[in-house]
Amino acid sequence: MKQFTTFVKKEFYHIFRDKRTMMILLGIPVIQIILFGFAITTEVKNSRIAVYDPSKDEATRTIIERLDNSRYFDVAVYMDHPSETDNIFKDGSISMAVIFSEGFMENLMHTGHAQVLLLTDATEANTATAITNYATAIIGDYQQELLLLQKIPFRIIPEIKLLYNPQMKGAYNFVPGVLGMILMLICALMTSIAIVREKETGTMEVLLVSPMKPIFIILAKAVPYFLISCINLTTVLVLSVFVLDVPVAGSLWWLILVSLLFIFVSLSLGLLISTVTNTQLAAMLVAGMMFILPVVLLSGMMFPVENMPDVLQWLSNIVPAKWYIIMMKSLMIKGAGISSVLREVIILTIMAVFIIALSLKNFKNRLE
Image 1 (spheres, one colour):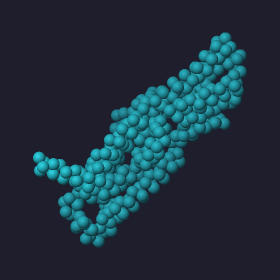
Image 2: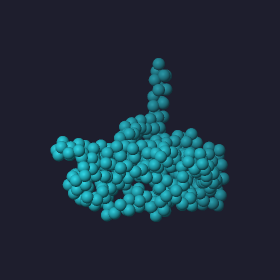
Image 3: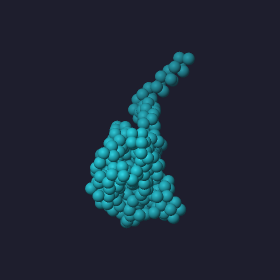
Image 4: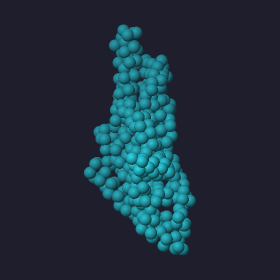
């Protein structure tokens, strides 16, 4: 029994000395429960909306206030003309536009009915359905109050128009997200074992004594996987267009360029992992744990980021897939130009430079 206790103590010492193992054993469950508890929700909240109100009367002001005061909407933009909606939607700054008719209150009092147009970004079909239902319910509640007060059969008629995806096809939402997940996971997993393989097979010595600088060794590891990822990108795009009927509404040229940038960022992440791990198994585990949950939960692929707590919204900003999915929806589905996604391009470029620099710093010129 004493020998058994000694062996148990020895195993505990091994575990406690390995900080990475301790982090996995104790940290991952905490991270998972927080992510699944707060990120996974079917309720849509804090959707940013734009408003065009030419009447500015009591009825329109009341409806706008009730929309803004609800937990479902935040009035972000007041438009001067309905034609502004197209640019605002393509910028991705709003999810819905509320456009009131001229003389809204006057029409309601004299004719008994008035119209309001609800324009919704339907690239995310489930979100579009939810927010139009919320807005219609709020407008309906106000209509019922008028009926009780005035005893006149008032009718406020919400007209719903779905932009970019009028058929409400789920593929329009999932294709950009799945494309980002596939590229990131494959690229990171492939390159995460690149340098580690050299360590395990004993060929790292040959690389270290070569006249090549570390930066070129790291980039040379990424080139073959970059070309393979280009093939994966082509395959996925062809299947998306010809099998899933998801159109490329914008420029195919810019779509490919931003995808290549994202591939480079993903490959860089894999290389960074390979510089800080010593075995291929550890590299694959770290890559899987670091990318699968964040990409699925925090990228906006399945659950709207704006519904999450502020801390998780901030964390989502360091997930490259989030910015890529935003660009894909704008370029591929909405038909926006490159100017609409310049912010995302700059962010991914900064990420690529930072990750390569960090990989170079962690690259060890001498074997331990």
